[in-house]
Image (cartoon, rainbow, N blue to C red; front, top):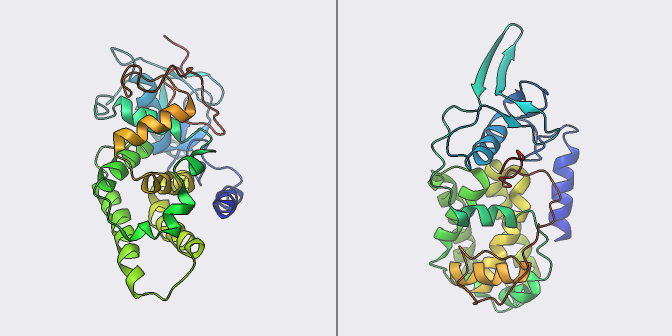
Length: 269
């Protein structure tokens, strides 16, 4: 866990002005047309898609996630007198795949997972060498996580790349000399982080932690979600059957960095 924190800190320190959304170096510099705050083009475009998705018709403007100034378009590819412009209300109909389950999982990435390591007994998972067992549910879980984090539907290449690394790790266990569970855990986190970081950038370390939690839980995806929701104290009837997790109190999760899940970011009901 300490190593994960150091990796994230080093990545942020490597760029003094990272994208406020993905927390990594800005790729394809883009600016909102009124306040001129800078973001990765893909990050601010996805943020606008999620924020505007609650409207029955596409709005003409959206508030900047940093300063709340009303903006009407994204400016990119600026080169002196030439630039490309993407208006807020264009091409916003391709997010139908983004379900309530995706939104819930994205929100989980901005909460404190403290306590879940004990709840799912992660040390026992490594101590008993359960990582050598195949998990048939993993592909569906990883696909949902990557879709939630990237806001993209077609993530098969990313999913198969990550799963391939995990499968290779599992098979190579038979060929290695005996090492401690802690060493295997560290090796796993390093190789999965390396595979996922080009796609998930600043969210990579948390993704690896969530992956470890799911594997250690040995639960179905639905059961994992229910335990997770109960632990956080959220009231999400669309995901959890009525009365199955008591009466948790709905509350806003702790959000350490800017994120683009919250559909109330534009201040409209």
